[in-house]
Image 1 (tube, rainbow, N blue to C red):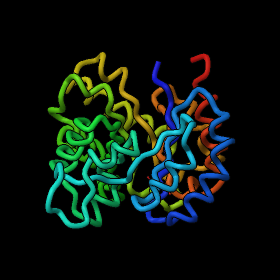
Image 2 (cartoon, helix red, strand yellow; image 1 turned 60 degrees about the vertical axis):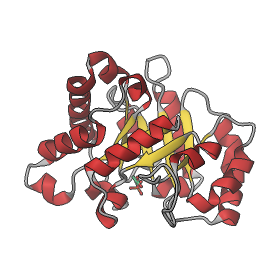
Image 3 (cartoon, protein in one colour; image 1 turned 135 degrees about the vertical axis):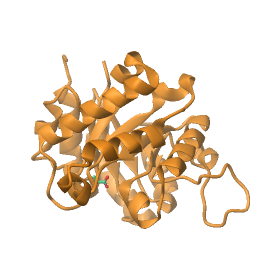
Image 4 (cartoon, protein in one colour; image 1 turned 45 degrees about the vertical axis):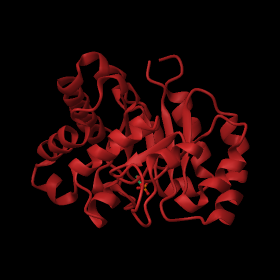
Length: 255
Ligand code: PEP
């Protein structure tokens, strides 16, 4: 049984003061939820403030990015081992990193390795853009991204990897994928994980959907046995995230 995940990516919102305020508002309602892993991803500078607020709870904390270097003279970068002092999780290869900062599958792969070796749980993002989808290239693009970003990872650590399918055209647009679209691609990702690591690993890998998830549409996604939770952007900046996490936690109860 794959424990579902409710992940909130705050992106470049909430400095330390606001982050602490918002975390205090959602902490108690979130800690009352059982049956899902709940993780917040504040901007780097706000991580210590949120860490303090979450102390003593099982709510997870993560970074939105990590360096591709283990440490040293890399101005402005943050190493996996540093993140691991305060966090358990990290997002790798978000489409905004891929598109605005030129992150390639090879870079995502090395960052994922560094995250794993620092004992972090990486959420590795893949997703096609609108042009790819309209040109019927979704399968090809996802196959290339999964093989390039997730291939050849250490077998003993692969069980920790979480994948997020985030179609770029659905991120921040208010135009979520249909459950069928999400399910089809997630099935493909699972098949690719099976090719890379065997059926057992594929069956145990948690694969999330992300892209304009709201409290109104999350139930539809969670009704799919293929979808193990959500990576939520915009709606994670509001108390609505608590409702989303509640639906994610209750949807697999008794499954
Ligand atoms: C995201 O940032 O990963 C995301 C899915 O954003 P949104 O929920 O706003 O579409």
